[in-house]
Amino acid sequence: MTEDRKKNNQSANDQDMMKLVDNLNRKEDVNLNRRAFLKASFGTTVALGLATTPFGVISAVRSEKEDSNQVEIASVDELAIGEAKNFNYPTEDEPAVLIRTPDDRYVAYNNKCTHLQCPVFYEKKDNVLLCPCHKGYFDVNNGHPVAGPPQRELPKILLEVKDGKVLAVGREYRHG
Image (tube, rainbow, N blue to C red):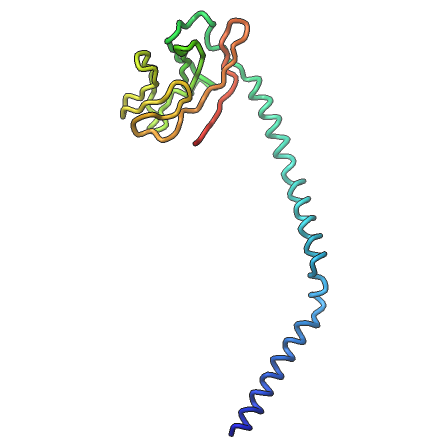
């Protein structure tokens, strides 16, 4: 019986070896070598680059249009140091607040709390932006939350001071 088992095992091993030899002799394996893989990878990379080029061009054109979206907010002498003014930017449906800080800088932020979209107000005494709904406080200098439930900073309005006027020139979304 042991010899019968050895013969059966031997024939099974021979059949397995034949299958392996068949796998080695496949013509498709010749086409799937390292050089072919690198050519295919390079071709795929070039194709993806060419396919995404229109999106880059559209983005560049769109950002140029947004740069020309300047809105006059106030004249330089309209706000005293420590005062704020509400305005809308970039559309009439989006409220924002301009602040002339105690160190005589202009900063502006979207006027909606990042917690539940309640309006924020400038508190001159504490030099903070306050959301009265849930007592959320934001730092005037950078828009980051300092107390309360808000976890994200206020979207910043980019400003330019030109010819005695304060202009809104864009928005900056920051997360961190």
